[in-house]
Figure 1 (cartoon, rainbow, N blue to C red):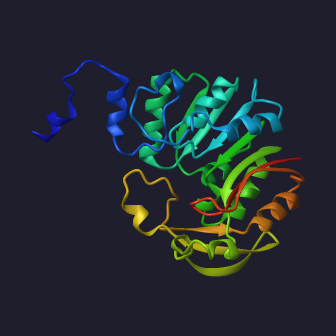
Figure 2 (cartoon, rainbow, N blue to C red):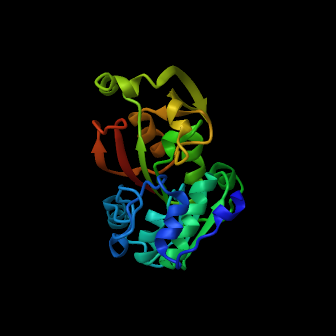
Length: 258
């Protein structure tokens, strides 16, 4: 009888769609849908997206690449702000399906969601994008410098929001600091920098997990992120949302362009 549990006996409703992933949503729905129950993070009304619009002269008629759309909150904002097209690449199957739910619920027309690893996608890309939006993904990478390099090959304007490693800051947050183990010095395409291995641990047991595709990731240090962007020719650097005491670890937003 389990297959019959997959049928609904009530009238169609947006809440039915959200409840497919009940308890897994991170995002609070946008203003016109505040009556619906989902998550709590204001990703559909995110001031970081408004800020990056100001830095890059708006999204009107722009061709956007978005990495890790999660639940399409930023995708929704990019479309509402006039983007001509948004290619959004998501590796997490459940997150991808949530994006499709949002696309249908909110009638997104300019967004195209792709299911797969965005690093592998970028390695195959020959087309260019006006702006790349990479919010909340760099610190989930095994090799974050590789991602920065690949992004620099497809766009002149890159937005990053990311956590970074800072030993002095993390001393005050032992719960976060305990997730880090090895520090290694690596050389990627001639750029020497430190990487700090971060373990996801118990977070992997949550069906709404929105980290990387491995049991661990590597965090770069703040100065190395900025230095490598400049080395890649993205020398116009603007920084905002600089929160060293963020509850999940120090973080900042970067608008980098050449």
